[in-house]
Amino acid sequence: MAAARVGLVSSSFSHALHASSSSTSTFTVSLRPPRLRLPPYLPRHHLLPTNYPRPSSSAARPRRLRATMSQAAGNPYAAELAAAKKAVTLAARLCQAVQKDILQSGVQSKADQSPVTVADYGSQILVSLVLKMEAPASASFSMVAEEDSEELRKEGAEEILENITDLVNETIVDDGTYSVFFSKEGILSAIDDGKSEGGPSGRHWVLDPIDGTKGGDQYAIALALLDEGKVVLGVLACPNLSLGSIGNLNGGSSGDQVGALFSATIGCGAEVESLQGSPAQKISVCSIDNPVDASFFESYEGAHSLRDLTGSIAEKLGIQAPPVRIDSQAKYGAVAQGDGAIYWRFPHKRSKEAVWDHAAGSIIVTEAGGLVKDASGNDLDLSKGRYLDRDAGIIATNKYLMPLVVKAAQEAMKEEGILG
Image (cartoon, rainbow, N blue to C red; front, side, top):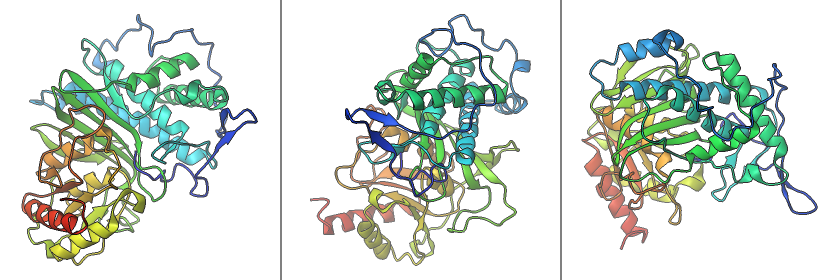
């Protein structure tokens, strides 16, 4: 998860993990009371009862989902893409409710210093639910995701677990698609659906339930499908992103619709549409071939990128425009639709790059005609497990600029002593 809980948590609250007198972690969160008191839950440890029927016909599915599937003739992953879109859209609805209703949120600081809130957990649960209900059945369900239930199972986490349970169930009821309710144990089990290690064999969903979580204005729900070691589809729900150009810090015009859904399937191109539902539009990366005319995106949080290094790379390329700093994989979406020419990420030396931070965004850029490479010019390999096996940095741009950016990056890294 990137480091900016944009709009979900007040910027004045970066820590809300409290220790009791016995040093046991407790969590505090302020949520609106659920509008509906749900019936008692079955003591079930799985996400869904095993006898719960899948929707038996297209009439049971939302109208926009049916339209998406009917328009996807020739797409070998049409059903999976429709399920992925539905999943991130429902998760985005939960995140928007949290953004609207929570002024103060219980936050637990993780090892990478990015916060975890009820929205992270709730988003992951809802994505798991929809994929199990909508995606074609396979031998086993595998999801590589950021969150697990370890902290929620600790003494003192009862309140946040209850809040997550209420929020998830309320979102399901409000959506009206599924007659499913979660017990607290079901919530914990659903979160742990994301504990897969991935790998080069079989199918694995890859999820960042909220990417962009500490400061700034953008966040994304990022979902991809890995099939035999290759990313074959990706979707990005960006609830705060204007459908107009995001090539500047002020976003688009005041009349632009807010809430973008990017999607791509291997061999089928990339598209963007409104999260509220609108005809999808094909997108493509820009055709700029002179770096002097290029603009570039980088992380909002300085702690996530070596800005001295990226400044040196920009100088070597002769880039005149100042950096555009926004959070989350929305940067991939921006490059894919031509709002900017380059996105690069050069994290600090000891930082690990998780597969969920790049899987969805990378295929959206490549299907829009761009390239995503590491700093040595190699393709990203997302089949090695939960973390990327890559060299020093990640670059997304068009085919004209990529060799120039890689060359400048190599020179700058050697000067900084990052490469031998």
